[in-house]
Length: 520
Image (cartoon, rainbow, N blue to C red; front, side, top):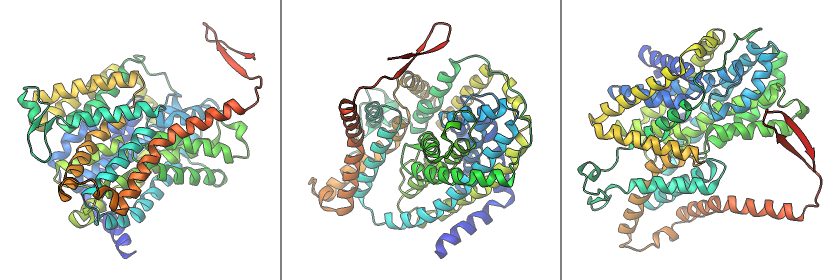
């Protein structure tokens, strides 16, 4: 317990020094502004600004990124409430409920509730992160190659089956990412593979270029194909901060969303989107007034927003404790640490305790900064939607590519990023999630390297993967995760075939967008 308190206290004390505090505040402001622009997110800001962190010490880079992550989560709520447009999939239900508040002239109240629930979710998830990551890091020190291999498999299978609506497409996307990691030197013999005669491919594809392309460039291309202008919005009206009676009513759904968001965030690949929808659904299930959901329900609104923010602390647990990215944004956090020579996962607490302290301090102090700057941004936020949308996307793309070039002064990396972005765009278009591919670019190498090294330990025998208890348990969990979607599909199909036929309504959408209900 003393070590837990020590990490939290040291992290906060380090974060309130002038330079770290300035970096956290700057990150929060950038996160709010970028998160408020529909189609962009904290991930976009992190990718664009990654090259800036190369000149920083690792702890300052962590402070900066924690600020962006915290600010970006709240920033997504601004367009959801003010113009009814979700900034990311993780704010869809916030747009459904929040825009109803705005139409009633209570937009300020909605954003105030969002700010409070975001603050509560972030603070509690930061505390939960401290309580869980240190015991996990201490325990994982005992892991050898077989355990790390099994954990990487579990992380990738979880990400593949939870990302997107179709688990099969998620598995295909993950397999595609693993295939890309085989390009370059063999992890044991160092012989080049699949270079196709190109010298640049003999050293492998640059992970940063691939990840920025798959996640960010594809997102920018996808968003740019939408309308050229954002909807016109109005200033948030009415009071902002909720009353004590409103906070009392919102406390239950807020706590529920925080718990759900934190633990779902700890599942690799699940992220804020899954947490958001699950929390909203559970809030409706436990609500005394489920009929109000979809019509401006305070319960559904605060549950979803609390879950969004709480997922950040959860995502950091596998990222730093096990070296397995908890979500797309955490992939970039992992990449920045690796570039600075720090390997997250087992032994992090011993090798780089300052990084863990900076993460905690960045989360907690960043949450306070988010409350302050978030409150100040609520009234003027509507002016962001008058910015030229094409200019924003083109500017973000150009800055991202300049950052990629600056890594190794290589135009080849820029081409790789553009090609990866084009592939990512078509994956999004045809329903293949890009997050498993991005995670596979990190975990694929870990899986192969630790599998090969585990075999070297036993002179080519696979028995080491079936005789170590931890490995057996983790691989069994991976099998359960892979089979769960198929079992769920089978049970649902069986339930439908055994249920008695009953008339139901279908919705017919006519050419003029009128909606008629037909009885069958």
